[in-house]
Length: 335
Image (tube, rainbow, N blue to C red):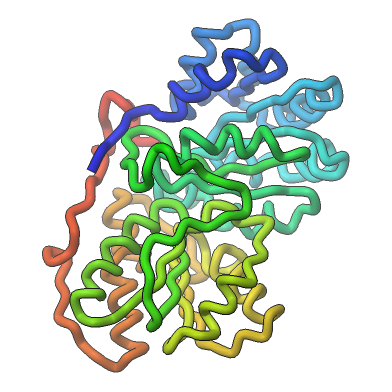
């Protein structure tokens, strides 16, 4: 597997070269949100707003009113929790092109409940005019800027940083409102997002060896979400749908799929894997994914329960995955 470092940091510099209307705003987490190369390359288009997220989002709204496109960079949790009113009234209500890049969503930080954005999709998708995207690999990161920039309104992106795998071909970019189909099968339909897609791929490969056929989709557009073709496939499946997400099961991908199934009258079981209505303590990403049921083994266990079968699959039987170091040259500090 190809592992790339600081993909967003390099990409935003190249991408913004011919876009003088693009500015980057940082809330005193410039290096931690991979905005440092932009700062050094285009200092006249970089604004350090300090530890003042509410001011930053209100300021970004003002910039957008003047025809600029501000890219807000900070940890995900500090965008929607700290500045929700400013986002609602200064950005979403006037439908302005402010693009918010939230780093360290879900269990990607060891910082505990104060730093873990586990309900951000639920909060942000409730806002009218808001588009929500989530990167799952290096290819998504390389193409999400184009997707967000093309949206005529505010966009919230759950973004990855540091060392990131390339799961999808580099010449197959993210597309707004389109899913990636990663495997074909008639038993279950699996929908995953973000870092959970790699876990889904690991589980699906092992399940196929046990004669369980899974249609696996990677979801990068969480709002808007309307996929009648997916609903048809779930309706035709033998055992229903499964969602796996780095977010609370309340209001995130599982809820989004449940709402869509209800709207289309799909009467099949839906198994929602994610953070189960609880806060998360601080630890490594790998530990937290295992502890809170966000990994491949949790997915396999769900299939076993649904089928009332035991496959005897062990973690060491799965495809290997790359676990980034908590401290590295791409991510010099844990937070």
